[in-house]
Length: 110
Length: 112
Image (cartoon, rainbow over all chains, first blue to last red; front, side):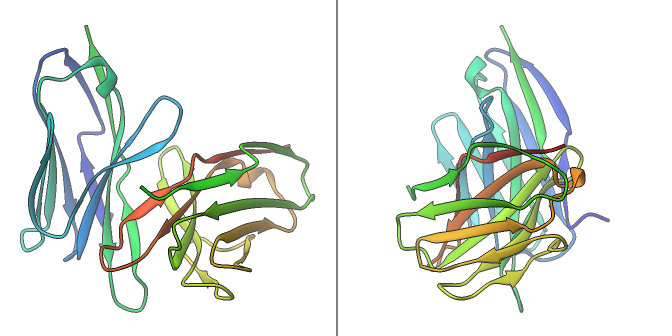
């Protein structure tokens, strides 16, 4: 299977709703980054986590290396949250590189 | 946050032609990366570099070369462009203990 599986592939929310996105990893990853790709195609870093939980405004992310997953929680969704969210996990060894999930496309409706 | 710029932002090329995509970063990061983004595949690593003068093959290097002439600049070269290389290309830089990567705005390449 894919090294990084991201779910759901697509998500539709009404303004004010809460929801979560999840990434499962096929192996132990060193760290994870979450990105938002906006309507202009720009990749914006939301979080970097080597372990534990981080919060930033209405967003919260958790990374559990041992259990091989990471989550991104969006609270009180706003129209500007629409876009595609990617998680990317860092693998180490001979090469240190990011492996991306396929993304979750989020649409927030009024 | 790291400043990563790419040029050109849009490019139309003909099959068999040579294309050079340029990337510049101003935060003195050691590592730089080239990815392409395609529907159904997400972002895939083409080439990367650990510093000036070094280039390494990523996951999909075939048909691409890379050049890192300086700490700041990293180029992706398509010697003989093909329509299958039509994509959006992203450059990223990173380094230090956090390994966080910062991405440029992307280049849309259309090969006719």
